[in-house]
Length: 166
Image (cartoon, rainbow, N blue to C red):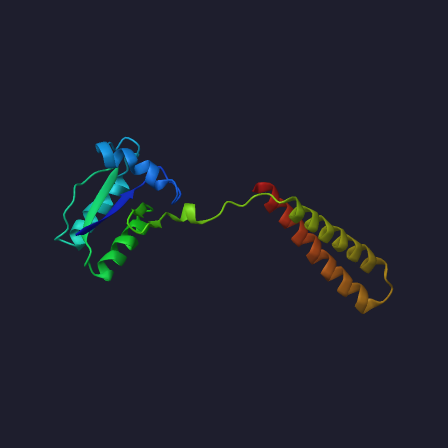
């Protein structure tokens, strides 16, 4: 008995979309859904260099790895590490197990109006502290208010810039 692992570069898909993407490849051997990439070829070359008894076809689009079920964990871990090194998608339909490049693992940050509202409140508090610290006649208290206010204004302005760049 053997298990199959599939490795490709693009398109990057989620774990749920991988079976649909592989459907034509399973049925017809059609690799046109996968973009060619030198990373896939390099992955194959490094895999063959690491594990000389590996059998499979070299391709620049998708690699179908047929492995024995009794393959040692260190070899499987090596395959996962090699795929991650080249930012490749690694899919195990038997698991199903899915390893994707870092790009897919990070959730995209969305502009949240609540964050902007909180930042603007912080900016307002910082401005009030700076103005209040400027006019308070107590020497220690005015410096504390000024320092805290300036830091709050600086952090709020930086947060606004970051929020606008998202």
